[in-house]
Length: 327
Image 1 (tube, helix red, strand yellow):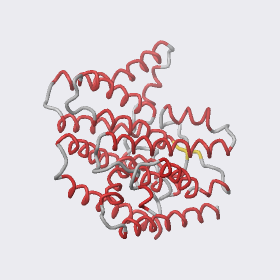
Image 2 (cartoon, one colour):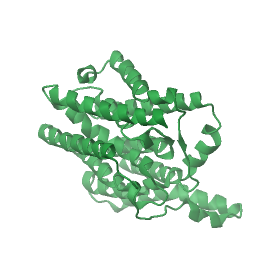
Image 3 (cartoon, rainbow, N blue to C red):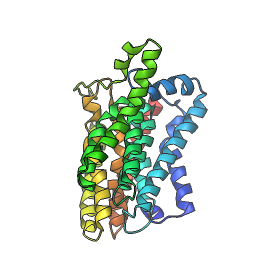
Image 4 (tube, helix red, strand yellow):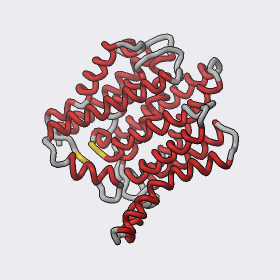
């Protein structure tokens, strides 16, 4: 099955769409679940106002479109940056499979929409190395990050990622750091100004992330442990195969993989350190996870291991669909 996605073709894209519909077949029986929280940010308010009133069929179509566009966009970005030895669609394959690994990841949530910003920020950071106009790029990256934080507070931690990436990719220049920080602050400045002018400045604190260490899952079932274990195995194997091919990469591509690793390390603890976050917030991790896992599906010479991992993923997805059919 995996061989269908090891090259770049229109037929592969069509099969990806069919696979996405198949792994979320539960939507034909159970209506899509929408997760909103007024403490999450503007994205949650947007979903609550414009998405929730929609017909369940439209919400299902919208969910499929969101995931499909995100998967293809991430896949295209990594191919354009030549982060793999050849063009393929295994990044999109990994992304689509991960959305069905947990029931909470099949919800239409603010975290799912926030992945658009995660992918956008990664593209900006990967393009930073040897950029002829880094100051403009840094300001725009900071601006996107600031807007993303207001949209979904739990990705506030991505600010640390920006600082770490700057240390890795570029030599220290105070002007560049200040420009990026100004870009992050600008959306908050305009929000504060608007709230002040409308005599609602006391609401400004609602748009600041609230840190709170907690466990997003109260009970871990055997199947959930199985899902977590498979994700860890895919990630470790992906890092292993990436290190093998890393020796043949140019410095720019190595730094781009460094950005992916930083995003993974910083996004993993998001469900544990922000208040009002549950397991649905962990879907932020599938952006870097999909890039890393794609190494397993694309870099191995023999297809036995990738196919075994693929069908193990399908087993988890079938079980999750069965649970949703029962509910």
